[in-house]
Length: 75
Image 1 (tube, rainbow, N blue to C red):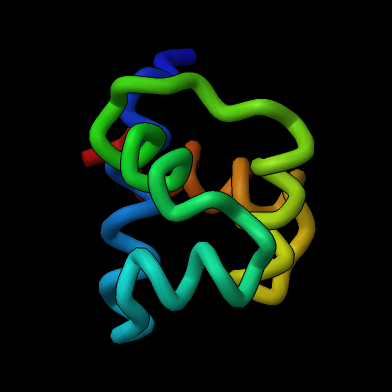
Image 2 (image 1 turned 180 degrees about the vertical axis):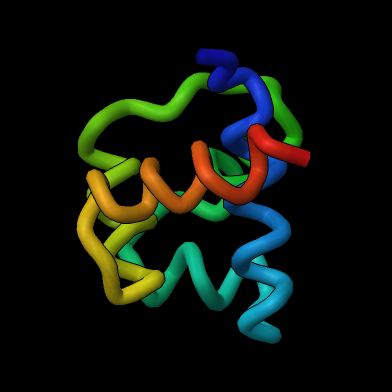
C-alpha cells in the first residue's frame, strides 16, 4: 500500500469541507506549519497528529485510513 500521498488526501478532504488549513489546524490542536508540511508531502504523519486529524473530520483514525485506501488509492 502506498501512503506517500496521504497528505494529498488530507488536503483534498479538508478543502472539501471548506475549512482553511490554519483554522483546521488550530481547531484540532495541530501546529499549522506541521499540517502544511504533511499536506505538501514534506513530513510524515505521527500517530498523535493522525488521531487529531481524524477527530477533526469527526471519524476514527482507522475509518479515515480506510476511506483513504478506498477512495484515494483507487483513482
